[in-house]
Image (cartoon, rainbow, N blue to C red):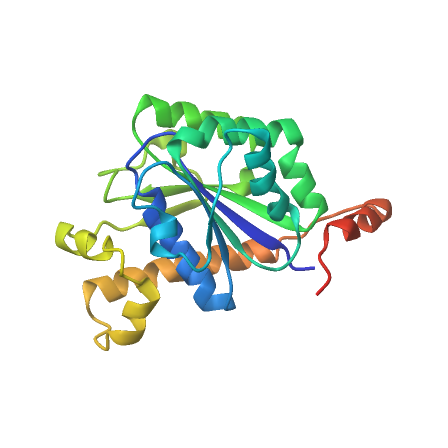
Length: 239
């Protein structure tokens, strides 16, 4: 059975490009599948909600109600890929909550596949956050993202594993161009006829990486006993 993927874009550090990558991933999934659902867990603006209001819901992990509103839709096997833009302020609380409720085991039981996209950094906070995730998250579910616009040079050795997405740096004028609230990555691909432009190639390369990652996630095999298979039907929304 194909899994329902959840992409959690995160870092304990601010200003590392989380929302940019969440935007690009959300637009890719929308283009590929015709549908997607994104969650904006941010304090600052502009946020994912400003860029993609039609598929984005706001969420928080401040209180029990907010946590339930965020987590309940995530364990449903509805074949709608989901993206979480997790603000740095919510990083520790979100993963503490995941551990307390057994989120990774519950999603596996429900044919849902969470993938943690950790935006790498060279600061002490980033190293601490990455090591925490390595202890708590299965290796197959943890992907390092090297945003070369923010982290110049080589990826720190401790984060340079087998599962790495490398987002090439754009010139500053193009970075400002794609940061406009009205800009759409998919819209640019459709409207720009010159495939040789740097931005066109950048978007296509990123979409290709997302496609390969998404295919591997959806086809991931989940092994269960017969009794667990019966229980997992409770997690599946009728279609």
